[in-house]
Amino acid sequence: MRTRLIAAVAAAVAVGAVATAAAQTFPARIDLPRGWQPEGIAAAGGNALLVGSIPTGGVYRVDSRTGRGRVFVSGRRGRAAIGLKVAGGRLFVAGGPTGRGFVYSARTGRPVKAFRLAPAGQETFVNDVAVTPKAAYFTDSRRSALYVLPRNLSQPTRLDLPDIPLAAGNNLNGIVATPDGRTLIAVQTNAAKLWRINPTTGRATEIDLNGTSVANGDGLLLVGRTLYVVRNRDNRIAVLTLNSGLSEATLARTIRSSRFDVPTTLARIDRRLYAVNARFGTTPRPSTPYSVTGFAR
Image (cartoon, rainbow, N blue to C red):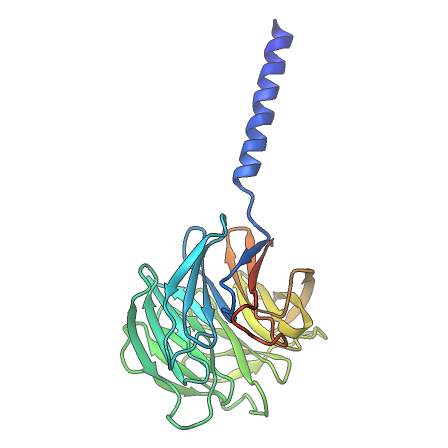
């Protein structure tokens, strides 16, 4: 009788473990609408991911567990969606060549406010955004400056970055903030450098990478002192360990995947990471497939 009882308990435990594992299975590939042309991605609470559309400014909301999604923000003429961040119930969107920043409700997708960031008529590419307790900071790949939008959505200002030399091509790209908002970290794509930036003064110091390459650096993700640098056309993600002063970084490992197809940005939900495949180099057509690659971190 005791043997039978033990066997029954063991079988029940095994069935429960299988059921739990099945319930926690997440797809490695999440399909986006055909022709979407994604670039930015952000976690939006629970299992939700938000993915922007470069040419339309639309945003797609998808369940990372089921892969099912819907258009969350409709695209419209004169808008673009590059980098995305969710904070305080709002979705902040970098507007690329429009020179603008857009704010939406992270709950409903309804527009809250739009801002002119770069001077009208000047070359610009508002590329990414990081949000601190005080403000949202937008990079512009065409100038050594950040645009600072207060969290109360009052008038944005420009923060010059005199220590970061401007060069041809894409300059500042991905940006992240420490949880206390006292430090920003940005990648300069054309120079393959990381910069530590004071969000109040604009003073910047190059981070010593100890020989690690961040060539083609794009989106950044900061988790504690671990910094993920998406190297888009290299189809890899450099995982760096920062020292306590954020002045040096060493390579911990490199993430590669056969599912990567020019990943640009990265989002985290619990123990999983999600990289959006922009597929730069593939001619975009209405029928072109796009996807997000999910993997354990």
